[in-house]
Length: 280
Image 1 (cartoon, rainbow, N blue to C red):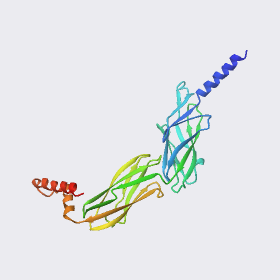
Image 2: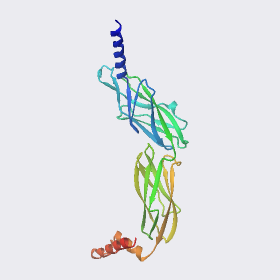
Image 3: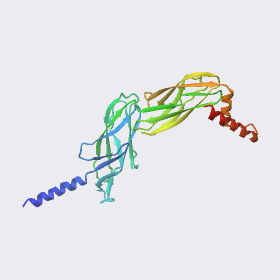
């Protein structure tokens, strides 16, 4: 006699579970969190001062209770970071209201010690009757979020001719960042700083050019440093040898001799080609 009531109760429970609101996290990693559950996600590793972006789809998995949209899926209107959950010195940036996808930012302190941290985020629906859904995000802070390689590390070139070092920068972080490449140990007029943007979890090859104006053998210390925090950096040893010789002048001819008539240009191009191929 009570069996129909039991079946009906089970059906109601199943329907209630099926209509539970959820949040689909799309970046920096894929997660789905559901209301009523112990929700915890991992945002990966970032460096001190770096900013991790958390993006979500706007679908709530619940039907709208608003008269205008009744029967359609309700959508989230904002993603916020709970200020009280932030460690000391950290900062936040809530998503814009109604943007797609909703994207909030968590920014580590520039001097944050290495370790694991937890912050809380919350979704907001303004008009369609869906309750806020909160979830915890774990973040690991490490200074070791950058790999840097320079090749070649030693270059011999002529006075006034470019020495081009090629850097490969690899981000081990789930945060985008920009880095400065500089050289120490050179005369002031020779050195400069180059800024490079490296997306999260990617590698980028960057040329770095030095033009020497005097004959000398210089030990060079290259420094790659994050704009987010001076605690994220790599130092690489290099060497620059500038000489003045017939061979270096011949190699330089491959770059062109614009002041000579075109009839002689082919000769200089041939000299440059042979010098670079036969005497590397």
